[in-house]
Amino acid sequence: MTGGDRPTRSGEAIEFDSTIRRSKRETVRELVDRWCKAHTGRLQADLASTLGVHPVTLSRWRTGERAAPDWVLATLAEMLGVEVALDATSGWSVVGGPS
Picture 1 (cartoon, rainbow, N blue to C red):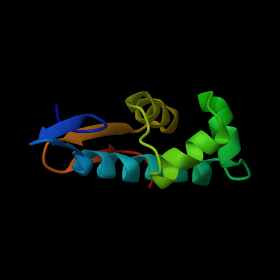
Picture 2 (cartoon, rainbow, N blue to C red):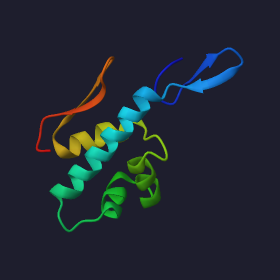
Picture 3 (cartoon, rainbow, N blue to C red):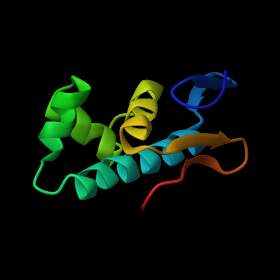
């Protein structure tokens, strides 16, 4: 198993493939920041409520302390009218919409 939150075995140790996760973290941060910019006056806590998660959970996803589930990327992208794409070489990216 490779990518995202799935461990890969290397000898006796279990390692995590952080390449895609790192890009995913950056993409979550970008989407949250875009939402906050587009909704001036609303807080990150408002976005958390809209997503049905605790504000601390959203904060952890945004800072990369925890990996966000794929549904979060899809939901944020839909809310912003953009697409999120995963490329095998470059990782996650946001396509379309204002930056």
